[in-house]
Length: 424
Ligand code: ARG
Image (cartoon, rainbow, N blue to C red; front, side):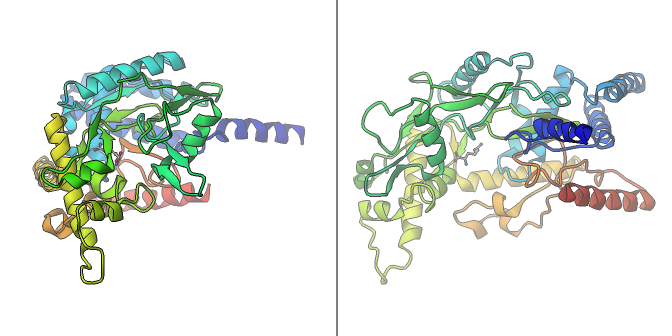
């Protein structure tokens, strides 16, 4: 009985924390399969000879059977991070997957080191407005050993303050993180406003939360103005120039990197049609319509469309004027089709998630809207939670030729894995 209990306790210690609950749980066999599939694709891509492949696989297999873990070489890591982007079904900007700059930060595991590196990351990514896509990859999970990781979804976010009347000012999505920040001694510089940059949080190896304050000036922001309607500037809208996503787990060849913050540049709709317009975010459409003198009455049922279009125009215009990289949704949708066709020419199928790929403006005006797509959840990839977008991740063999029995076996194995993951 005692043995049983203590086993239960170690298991819950290993799997009970906020990160552990999100990590994929792979059996040794699954890990081995993913490692093999990944190394094969890597060696195909770089053209390693048969002897080199065999040697590397020997090594990895031995490590896996010894410790259920292996270390990627820097080249494998860089390749894996780029392919993870290429595989990510929800990203419309994948045309540029090969240009991702990968910074190998393994070995940096103290919170100070991580904070310092992220400061540098922000600076390099912003460059002089010509945004570079960068990923900083810190330590992977090694067996039951959880490294330090970043708890915040993004490095820069705006706070949300409750007002005395029960309302709120700021980005409602971050209400909880704002409360956490305040409980740890943070407060806005002046009066609470709608665009107060929050500190971000690291969890160290022991699971302790550490607050990291942004260095003043580390995050560059763009003030939003409309090219000809002056009324909009009076709303005092602004947004940061670089989104650094820090809440996703990178999985490569059966190894998970929970601390792998990466950035791209914005597509205008992310800010204008979602962050500013969503009812659960800034909910600004009525104010924007009023500021632009768009009538909001039954005679004008399309007032939201008008406000959305003008808000998008203002965001694109302001980033353009500030010299900060941004892409409009029509160009992004076109680039996606270029990516799609390129992948087909390379004999690869593209995993796509329609609900995420079609931009929230002018949906049917793009080819993507009419494109038949399927998300077959390939690895390497980025995911948030094993019970959600991480559930179905597994190697995809559908691009190569396989005999019938092999195809059937793959299909059954796929079902079995998903069933097993749901049952756990
Ligand atoms: N949608 C998120 C935001 O508005 C950013 C997600 C990543 N976007 C990107 N363009 N890489 O902050």
